[in-house]
Every structure is written in C-alpha cells, then in structure tokens.
Amino acid sequence: MKIKDVIQVLENFAPLNFQESYDNCGLLVGDKNEDVSGVLLSLDCTEAVIEEAIALKCNLVVSHHPVIFGGLKKLTGSNYTERTVMKALKNNISIYAAHTNFDNIQNGVNFKIAQKLGLLNLKVLTPKKNILKKLVTYVPAGHEDAVRNALFEAGAGNIGNYDSCSFNINGTGTFRGNENSNPFIGEKGKVNIENEQRIEVVFEAQQETEILKNLLKSHPYEEVAFDVYPLDNTYHKIGSGMTGEFEKPMDEKEFLTLIKKVFGCTFVKHTALRSKPVKKVAFCGGSGSFLIKNAIRSNSDAYISSDIKYHEFFDAESEILIVDTGHFENEQFTPEIFYELIKNKFTTFATYLSKVNTNPVNYF
Image (cartoon, rainbow, N blue to C red; front, side, top):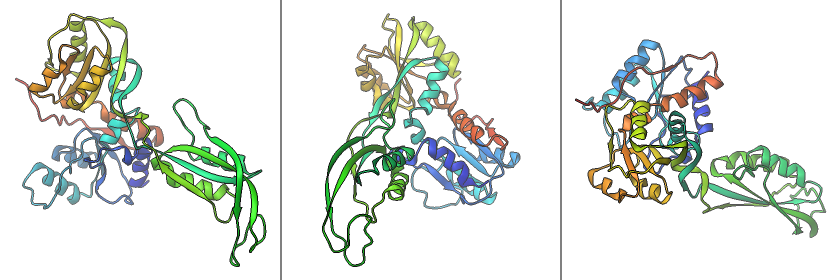
C-alpha cells in the first residue's frame, strides 16, 4: 500500500477544497508514491511525535495541525518546525496535515465533540458558500435516463437528505457537422434539428472531474454540449462550528462540570452564569472566537470553544454562556476520526494513536 492510498481515504472524507484559504492541508513532507509501513495519528506534529513514529516503524504521520503553516524559508534547526521537518526527512517519514477541511466537514472535528458531549439534533453553525456547482447538459430523446444515472453515480444530484435530484425540460437543439465530423444523429454538412432534454444537476465542486468523465462516457454525441456554473448558495453540510442539544436541560454548573470531565480540563474559563438552564449548545473545535456572534444568533444557551481573548468575553452581552476549554483540550479527540477512517478501510494495517501529549500549555 502507498502513502497516496491513505491520503485518498482522508481526502474522500474531507476534500482539500473544504479547507480555509489561510490553511496548509495536505502532504507537507514526503513522497505520496512511497510504500507505507505504518501510520501514526496525532493532534500536532512535533519532534517527539516523529521520534515515536521512528520507534513504531511508521513512515507516515497524520496530524490535525500543520507543522508547516507559514512560509518555511530555511532548514537550519533554529525552531521546532525546522527541527521536526529535518528529523522527518532524515528518517524518511512523510507528514500529512488534515486541518480545517476536517473542521468544516459535517462529520469531522465538531461532530466528534458532539459525540463526546452526547448532543443531538446537530446542525452546522455557519454554513459556507461557493462549495456547490451546477451542471447543465443537453441529451437527445431516448438517452436521458442513461446520462442522468451516470451523473448520479458520480455524486451529482445530492441535496440535503435527497439524492437523484435533477431538473429536466424538453426543447429543440440544432447542429451541423463539418467534413471531419462523425455525427451520432443526422448527416454531416446538413443542419439537424433534434428533440433534446435539458438536464440540470447540482454537485460539490471537488466532484467535477468524475462527473464530467461520466457525462462524456454516457452521452451519445460526438461533441457534448454542457455548462458548469459556480453557485453562491449556502451549503448546509459544510461550514464552521456546530449546534446541538442535550436530551434534557441541565443546570449551568452541572454543564461546566460535564465540560471539565469530558475534555479533561484542570479548569475552564467562562463568562458570568446567567441562572438559566443549558439545552442548546454551539461549539467550535480549536480557535472559535470569530463565531461568538453566530452562536448568539443561533439562540444557543452556551458556546464552547478556545483561544478566546479577554475583550471577546464581553461579546457575550449576557446573552450566552461562553466557555473556553483550551485549544488542545477541545481538539484532542480529532486523531480518533483519522483512526476510524483508516482502520475501516485497511483493517489489518498498522495504525497507531500517538501517546505523546503535545499540549504546549501547562497549568499550575
């Protein structure tokens, strides 16, 4: 098995185009065509994690946080990033980062948090735009079903809880082939008027290559007419943060005690208690202060995230209980997602969850 086979499993689940524009997901160090001997999964990639990979004879590390985030202009060992990359290169260890694409996917980082807390009725807090595209094509009468089914097979036509979604309308198409043409219908050199069906389907942008391949393969025409449009629609499956509900409301102090227990926190920072029960909760793995106002607008009783600055706690405006767990604490379960994906696909393959505590923050 190759490194690229593991990468394909991860990217089929959370495509790279779901990452934020500032991010650096994907293969950061190594050759995707190398045979893979074992995979070590971690939240961060540090020197200690690379040493653990060496001890376990793993030549691939998959981490949530990219070890190379900004520009890496030299490799002299002057900081932990350079030393980690140098150690990986010396020991032929590849490094792959699965960061905000796993944050933004519906069943990713935030879904794992919801599982740990026992939350129900999950929804993406802030869905993203510019994820969807629309394909429009024109098919001669009698061939519509074959083309539609080929598009559906490639992943087109999925909207929310529905699949095989399309819009179809009958019309008239005209064409004339030149001397080099080989028309499926009509004669070269003559204008042909044909009954055709216009088919429209929506799809996720990263599916475009496969969908167009299936279109061209199933369509009978020598030259296939089609249009692909980017859509500005909000896509409710992909986005930042999430909301969920407890089966029964709980007291605020009971809620904070649960947070400490689930995330293993020494303490949590929070805004003033509101003397109101907690039923609906908004949350975001990692740094989520940018979603505070969205959490308030969602009518959530509490918002869980991390890296919230002093003045940002004022943004609660007594409308919501803000809880800061710490960055490591609320994302520590992310490697479990990688593990489940890889083990479900490669049942006998050597896959390990890192035992290195990479949290750089300590509490006294």
